[in-house]
Length: 119
Ligand SMILES: Cc1cc2nc3c(=O)[nH]c(=O)nc-3n(C[C@H](O)[C@H](O)[C@H](O)COP(=O)(O)O)c2cc1C
Image (cartoon, rainbow, N blue to C red; front, side, top):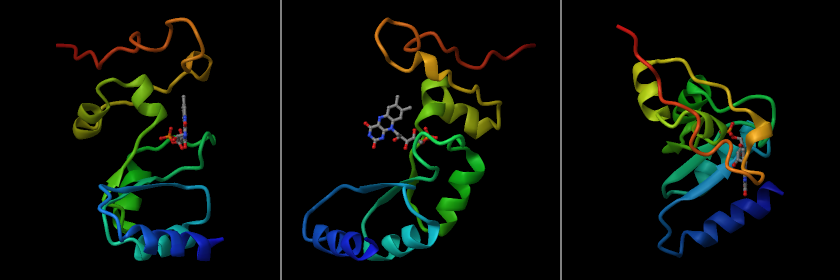
């Protein structure tokens, strides 16, 4: 299967794409190999999709070191509307609640709060 994706990425280079986004659905060695097959902007989501680990700062930093240009954050963005500011300032990250993932009703969209600084 790595050969298929290597070929796909090589062919995609003919188009003027803004980026390719990879999810960590295979082992790291394979993903690093795919990085080498794609010379354009690469966004990586560094954890197993819907697995127990959330994309966090260490995982993001690791993948930036392995060659990703950008990192996507999924669940932590749902539960931290100010995620970028939290990462910049090294503030705590609130864990998301899977029972409120966009499944009808309005809970989970606008009710996670930004970080509250205390004096
Ligand atoms: C509510 C929700 C919807 C998602 N929908 C998709 C989807 O449509 N396609 C997809 O490839 N991944 C989807 N994902 C998986 C994410 O892209 C990502 O792989 C996963 O959430 C792990 O990354 P994270 O720890 O940053 O959330 C979804 C995740 C969540 C939480």
